[in-house]
Amino acid sequence: MSTTVKRVYGYLAEFESASKLYKAAEKVRDAGFEKWDCHSSYPIHGLDAAMGIKRSILPYFVFFGGLTGFLTALTLAYVTQVEIYPTVVQGKPANFFTVPAFFPIMFELTVLFSGFTTLFGLLGLMQLPRLNHPLFASKQFARVTDDGFFISIEARDPKFSAEGTKSLLAEIGGANIELVEDEN
Amino acid sequence: MGHRVTSADIPVNGEQLPKSKVQIVMFFTGAIALLGLITSAIFLWGNPEKASELKGNYSFSWLFAVFYFFTIALGGCFWTLLHNVSNSGWGTSIRRLMENVGFVFPFIFVFAIPLLFPSVQAYLFEWMTEHRDAISEASDKSAPIKDILNERGHQHDGLLANKAWYMNLEFWHGRFLVFFLGLSFVIWKLRKLSVDQDTCTSPGTTRLFKARAMSSWGIAVFAVTLTFIAVDWVMGLDYTWFSTMWGVYVFAGSALNSMAVIVIVSILLRKAGYLKKVVGPEHDHLMGKLMFAFTIFWAYISFSQFFLYWYANVTEETRYFILRNTENWNILSYVLVFGHFGAPFLLLLRSDVKKKNIFMLIMAVYLLGMHFLDVYHMIIPERGPSVGNIVNHDPKLWMPGAWIGDIIAFIIVGCGFVFFLLRNLTSVSLYPHRDPRILESANVHN
Image (cartoon, rainbow over all chains, first blue to last red; front, side, top):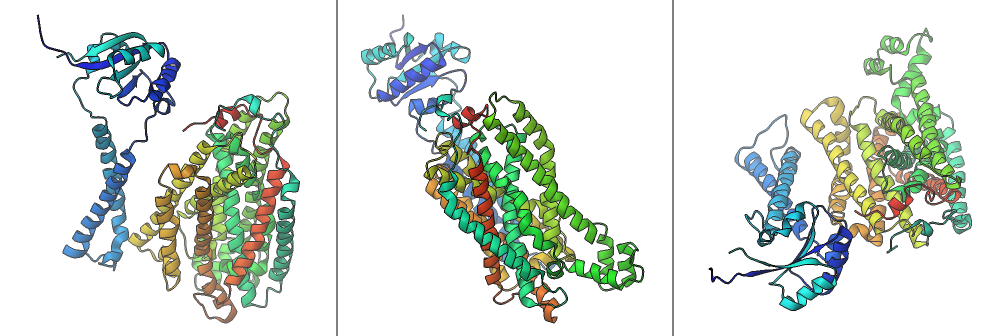
């Protein structure tokens, strides 16, 4: 018999439908929880407002990613085409005013760097990729990819309490309330 | 709004902007437009034999003003057609505004009439003068114009002879009329389908399908009209020059600025207490996104045109930018790069500013100001070389004092535009309140 103390991840509660999940989410939000999440097999419109999620900071990363791409391309083209190896073609200027020729490169690198920042910034903010998630320990949670609607409240939330959170979830209509523990 | 809009919120007979509210504005704009048009037309009609600098300058001013408001009205047709053809639901509550801006187009014809005067054409379109001279000097006046020009053998006559299948007087005037009639019919019919729905006791989807079917060919009529009027009126100012991107370039500015007008009208109407039930911040956001998108599209197209010329260095093409990059015109070219693209791109980039009405109102007016400079940049640099040469064989870059005429013409045609827009707005319900998708549009979320 193992004597290891298992770490509590949090509570998991099931809801009947998307609209019940939506209404419950508003109540969890109003109760002031921060470390919690809704789980559904498809996107629910307006759920982020019901959960009180703030706007992502990703757009700012992307803006500066794009700006970096823009400046990289400008520097790269300017240094090679004007400083190191000026090329005179068809009487075009060999100074900064040959910049129209750099525009396609500037455009492409802006798009490329913005795209990369979007992808990797998104993965970083979502802490992906990860190999496992504590909620996978729950048997009923497997239904989330099929017809299950769940709310999970994590134990590391400052408002979390073993009794209070459980009764809150029951109050707002959660069924099959389960205390999920880390598998090892 | 704030809550979900249901059919109980929509007035049975729609919302109407009463004529009495805008009577004073309509009276003054109408009076200025009418008196201005008559005075200008009499002034421009004049004696075509006697070259006059003032008349030459004002001919360009008039073309500038008419073309500016022509692009905006045409943009209204574009948004109506696009909305129908793409079967959109989001914009049903502002569709009537699109239709009303578009329906100014038939009335623009009244202001375009002076362009048909031979005395005006003599200054604007040198190729017409060449054709007229060649015909009057020809021994056999019934011969094809191509042969007449070839026989005459003046400088550039070979070029004109090769272009004569398209650039000849009959075809030019024919196109002028056909384009106005064709697109006027399309926008009139689409607006009529939409307006008839307002009083229909059993409104269904029949008219939506009809409008969609009509728009699917109507949008082709629009494309041809915009492209070839841009070619005939503006590219034709210099018959040695050509650009295959010209139509798209004019279209980009046209769609952008008519959206700016729609934004202004929708905000002002809501400030006056109308349209509030069906138009909200979500619509502001969507219209703002379209304005932003077309700011980028304008830059993309205008840069592409410049860039290809710059690379290829073909004499017939580069002339356009050589003239516009000479001396002070170069400043205007730079202003367009940063003012028409750079500043609005950065200012409209954030999503939350698109929902701020005051900000969007200022941006829309600003963009219309930039469109003023853009159209100015298209047309007015041709004035000095043409008029200067015709009047005293002294081509100039800039005709001193001629800008006063530009402002006067702009005010006259602008008043006409406002008058007809208000006439359209007050004559029908402000939104299609019996459209099956009005609730979908009122509750749009993006």
